[in-house]
Amino acid sequence: MEYSAKVMDHFMNPRNMGQIEDADGVGTVGNAKCGDIMKIYLDIDENGIVQDAKFKTFGCGAAVATSSMATELVKGKSVDEAMDVTNKAVMEALDGLPPVKVHCSCLAEEAIHAALWDYCEKNGRKIEGLKKPVNDIDELHG
Ligand code: FES
Image 1: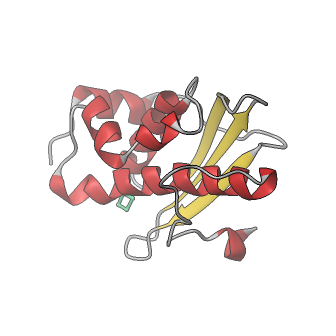
Image 2: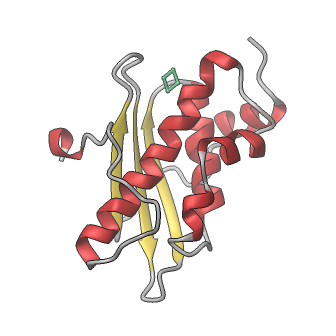
């Protein structure tokens, strides 16, 4: 399996690893098949701009790399623009992923969506096109 230099860089030197205390949105998602879990924290200001993003990922190298890139891409965006950080956008930014690792980027998209969903619920907001992610496991893991 061949990984791009960017995937290796984000795997070896992940950006934004950690957590945000009292984050405005937190999303935890899991993939039942591989068992990997991804948690994303968003700090969102009163204008709906993502000021900071952090992640904790218990999973494969591609899951770490896609979490790292997804948090980088989402920073500075409005919550509506954050919807553009799709798994495709994350994969493109990483110069691609091997086919068996595409689902890892989907987990990153779902984790962002779960965090945005949490933010919307806490703040009575709606984001065009946002649905509650099916793999949201906040209920199970707190
Ligand atoms: Fe499942 Fe990477 S192998 S997220």
